[in-house]
Amino acid sequence: MPPMPNTYAVIMAGGAGTRFWPASRATMPKQLLPLGADPNESLIAATVRRIAPMVPPERVYIATGEALLDATARELPQIPRANLLAEPVPRNTAPCIGWATATIARRDPGATVMVLPSDHFIANEDGFRRVVGRALEGALRGNLTTIGIVPTRPETGYGYIEVGPDLEPGLHGVARFVEKPDRARAEAYVAGGKHLWNAGMFFFQARAMTEAIAMHLPDLAAGLTRLDDAAAKGAERAALAAIFPTLPSVSIDVGVMEKAAKLAVVKGDFGWNDVGSWESAWELASRDPEGNALPAGSIAVDAKGNLVRDLTTGGATKKRVYALVGVSDLVVVETDDAVLVIPRSRAQDVRSVVEVLKARGDKGRL
Image (cartoon, rainbow, N blue to C red):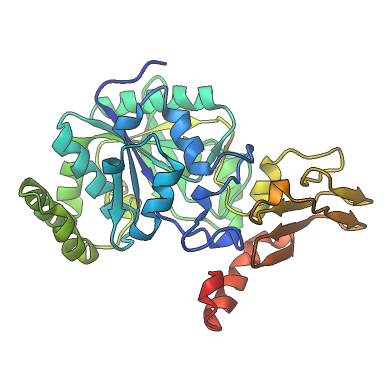
């Protein structure tokens, strides 16, 4: 698929990812870690590589935080440094997308923009690009377009999109966005076949998003106009430090998408995984016949379904041997200053460790 003219990408990469402690830290969040199928490729590097046939590096923008700027630049040497947008403080996705869109629109007023998370895994990359191409076509029709993932289970941790009438082949209207449901409603959504997982991917013409923000989030629009004025005078950086923290902290879903008139969704079924926990990392990893995902040279005796990650400095070259005997369904993660041992079924509870560290002031391990 050749690069698409006037198409730009915004990769949102500001999250902390506390569910991947001890690997994920304040200055090394999950998008910078190799948590997908390839142990040598970070999630954000995979995200940029996936869209490279559609959007060249010079038209890819990375929205991140100031504290992550250098680490992100090192991970993505092909992206121009000027395309790394460093937010002085996190203000949720509407200000993030609004500022990135305004930045792109100054460069190309006729731009079409795709916004993607930086920390997801896609198994079928060709299929993903075909769906993205359809979503971009929907955006060119003037719609604020999203991709909804065909659900594979009654998941209560995701928001959903209720599919409306067909607009044209492969492009559907949006009846409504639905917040995270309880178990019974999630089961009904999957059984009914009219609901998709909201994966946080958005496609739009820059002018359409600018108009939607002006209509539904006027305070944000006013702040973005002030940033545009400052940029025209060569003073955007100073203005950003003063203005960005005052912008309303609201998600693009709540602030714009749930209120906009021209919405569209494309169904996606391409092996999507939001890599939300160490359980997800186990699911994506290469495993032996007993379901263990272990470093080379490990020993497993009567052990099944375990994940071991050696993330120590130079871990892959050390002569350390991990030996597991008579244990099942564990996650073991070792870094230079911490070791995590937790049942896979309780992978989400890693956040409780982070809370304890915060409470006792152990900032060095956060």
